Length: 442
Ligand code: NAD
Image (tube, rainbow, N blue to C red; front, side, top):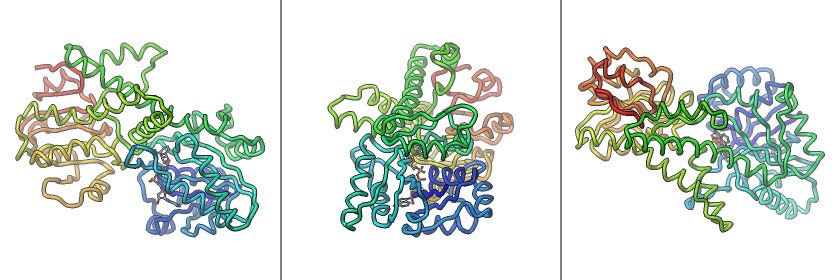
């Protein structure tokens, strides 16, 4: 089938590559010329395991191509996927300018029936806005062409995006047209072979499902972080509590890890947007507001602990392990590492940081500055540091040579933002060790 995808970011590029992988003819359109030039030259602008190989293979096979030519994009696919960004606006609502710009572009260039698929995360009612924007342009062209708008939110996780797309837990499709539903069933057939993963519903429910999923996951994290704060005050160990509650299948072990807060391009903005939606319809979203407030507080926890330990941080050198908002991605949007580093810089401290893939992104965000030293290895980052803060739980950081680490650090103090290390072992290795919601062992 012929598919056009607007937006070649994490979602658009993965969607395009995976749809091409199963034999579709995919054209990816982006307004960012540099991105498209790089993709045409065989490069991939983001780090996502397996993506580069998949893009290269399908490009070589002629099933996947890239363009900035919007008209060519609209002419190409029966399916017109919208996978552009929906960043938070100043008031927290989702900014729909990119989504609606694509809708208008489709209206400007279409000459035949098209299925417009909203894959971006968009508030309830956006499909109606897309329909209106597109219809408005068609009307101004004096054209009466048929089209459908479908909501098909994406649930992939950065770092495991290919696998999530190829073997999805569910494929949510919101449509009011049975014929379109059938066409999407055919498009998604190759990803839906062993079990029927398609969950068909009305458009508004599909739009809300994406927000509900992310808000639920964010709630689990903030709930556990709340428990970690209580555990700290009460002399309990939140890791024991985690195992104790996770054993209940109604709760489960997934997504109940306490830590230094959630980040990334989705949870913070989607919780914000859902709060805004709630308020706009006269509903006070009390749970969501608490989820956000707890997370904001949690992102400051490592800095608070550093301050509590050292008092004045001016002139201190802090090693930061992990810059990406989670392992296996180079994405630093809303990353807890940023909150920590910015607070340290404000205090006059120097950061020596290492991340296996996000250092280029860090440099892009912060540029060169004297109080940021990006180091080639975790050990190099720890050299001469007054303390080490582990922010992202990359596998690489899980089992360091503690003895060597103690020798290269100026003082053996570790702040573990992901509860990766064992407190007793850290004490035995001679470290002063601070974790999240765990009692200290001396
Ligand atoms: P991204 O910022 O990585 O990519 C968006 C791309 O869209 C950019 O390359 C940008 O240049 C391009 N773009 C902007 N306007 C355009 C236009 N008019 N025509 C063509 N291209 C245009 O964003 P992302 O992380 O891929 O997210 C896209 C959407 O998917 C968002 O709504 C996000 O909430 C949602 N989502 C993201 C994830 C994730 O893990 N990143 C997961 C599920 C859903």
